[in-house]
Each structure stands twice: as C-alpha cells, then as structure tokens.
Length: 466
Image (cartoon, rainbow, N blue to C red; front, side, top):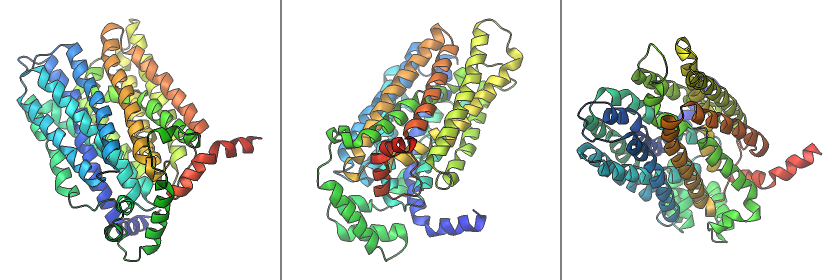
C-alpha cells in the first residue's frame, strides 16, 4: 500500500482513528503506572536516604499488588460498561490514577505505596476492560484491527516515557511528571461521542445516529444503523451473563480467551518490564542498566507500530505465530545466558547475547502477542456478553500477572534469573502451539461473520483434515 493510499485511508477514517487515539491515551495513563516500578524500585532499594525505606520482599509486593487491583478493575468494568456506557466509566478510571500519583509523591511510608499501586490496578483493569469494547464498536470493519493495535502502541509509549524519565529525576518528581497521562486523556476523551452500539441498545436512536455520523463522517448511516440494530436485537433477546460465557456454543471462544490470557502473560513480559533495570544489572554490558532499559523501551515503541499497518493486511493469525516464534527464541537466549552464569561459566564477554535476546523477545512480543489479542477480543463475542468476556480475560490475566511478578522476585533472590526465564521460554513455546491449533483468521470480517467463524471453526478444520 503506497503512502498516498495510506494518507487517503487516514483522512477517510480520521474521526475513528482520532477517537481510538484519544481512548488509548487511557492506556498510556495506566501503563505509566505499571512501568513506574522499573526506575522507581532501585531508587528505594539502593539509593541513600530514600523517601520510603523498603526491603526487596516489600518491593515485590509493591510491584505485584497492582495485578490484584486490576482484577477488581475488570469486575467494575464488567458491571458498569453495559449499564452506564463506555464513555463515563472510562473517564472515571482517571480518578484512582490521579489519587495514586499524589499518594506516591507525598509518601513517607510503604503503606501509601501499597494503596497507590492497588488504585493503579483498579484503573488498569477498567481501562483494559473497556478500551477493546469501545474501539471494536466505533470502528469500521476495514480499520478495526489497526485501531485496536493502538492499545499497545500507547502502552509501549507509556513504558518508554517512564524508562526515559525515571532514572534521571527524583522519586517524587517522577510521580508528578507521570500526571501527564491522566491530563492528556481527560483533556481529549471528554469530547468524544459515546459508542453507537451502546446508545442503540438503550433505545437512544437519534443519539446513536449522530454518533455514527460523526465517526463515519457521513450522513448516510441508516443502512449500518439498521444492521447494527438487528445485530443488537439478536444478541439482546437473551440477556447476557457471565454464566452464558460457559455455554457449549462459546466453547471455542473460551479456548481462545484462555490461550490469550494465560499463554500471553506466562511469557513473562510483565515481570521483565517491571524489573527491567534489576534484570539488566545482572548482564555484563558497556551500557548501564538505565540505558539498556531506555533502549528496550525505544525498540518496543518502534516495533509495535508495525502491526498497526499489518494487522488488517497480513492478518491476525500469521502475526501471532511469527510473534510467538520470535519471542521463544529471544527468551531461550536469555535463559541459556543466565543458566551458564549461574553455573560459574565466564560469560562476561557474551552479555550482549542475552541483551540481544531480550530485545528480540520484546520486538517479537510487540509484533503480535502484545497487540493482536485486543483486536481478536473486540471481535469474537456478541455484544450482550462482550463485557463479561473482557472481564474474564482481565481477571485471568490479572491472576497470572500477580503470580508471575510476585514469584519472579522470589526466584531471583533464592534461585537465580535462569529459573523464571526457562519457565517463560517453555510457556511461550506452548502458546505458539496453541495459537497454531486453535486460533483462526478473522481479518476483514464483520463482527457477525467473526462470531460465526469461531463457532464453527473446529468442525470445519476437522472436516478439512479428513
């Protein structure tokens, strides 16, 4: 696709992209809270006279407790998104973040850090519970995948911001500077329309029409409005519930949710990002641990832009498979390096190999595993249970993240870095296998077509094999 074609496409769908960009600023906001621990913990553990004195064990709780808050946030999102809409619960998610940064900036005891991190988790869960739904409902079929990929673009931008600023400012200044996230989100998203799907579901046809006209930049939206209304009537005829997710009709959908929630998080990305400077301090390199973290963040930021342009051209499935294979290889290099180091083998001159391996991992992860799941989750469930599906995904992800992040520090202190890296390597290999076996291609399909593909995919695949 030529540059001029991309320009025409961008102009045609600019309101959809603008709303998606504004919505994903919330992701930037909450991911800043997640990445904060990488530059902040070394300040508390190693620098003289820190504002808050903590132990390594307390630091692991400070990092991991955000995942618990994320589970509560996902539950809140599931309970409010179909009652109060997508927009206002979304905007309200900025309040805990603002409160948390103020508490961290003023903290003189670790209790405030625990509370702030839990509040961050609540906002994190709400944001990731609503953003895929909102973007899936406001975008056209041809740009939905690219728009959903902005979720991870903004996430990597948040990581890069914290990694680049954190090592060079004080503990308190980092908290105040991180207020940039909620400020940008609130100043832009408050002007965006509510989802036309939600408005139609509540019987607000005129408001839904105006919303859809703004998103499509076209007054002739009656046909799409009619199709959307029929789709809603089909799915809302039976009230959605969490129990409905576990009906046989959604067996394949749940398999995909399990693969994406458990498999993707067991790759260890959250632990590596949360403890980036700590990990890099164990690698022999001419770069400092802070400089390696900045390189890591910058590489992620550049690489994650590629799926935005490829996801609606190449497809979801090929990107996931290439991403899984590259992530496996990168983690394997890191696992071998840390294993040899623990065995007292002189690996000082090979530190660059493990660093390259970690870079390969984050590049490959950003290429698919970090982005494609949100595009898929915004497509594979009907509207009446989509919020519950996203809540289930968030709860599973939060539980896995908590276990991975908390146990990572324990393994690091008591065994060595090689143990968690081997666990991450094997898990990523299994995720690649499950993606190959269970996740179909949904590129360029309408939401109804995607759900039909998922419902009959296993049978169709088996019949082809026969």
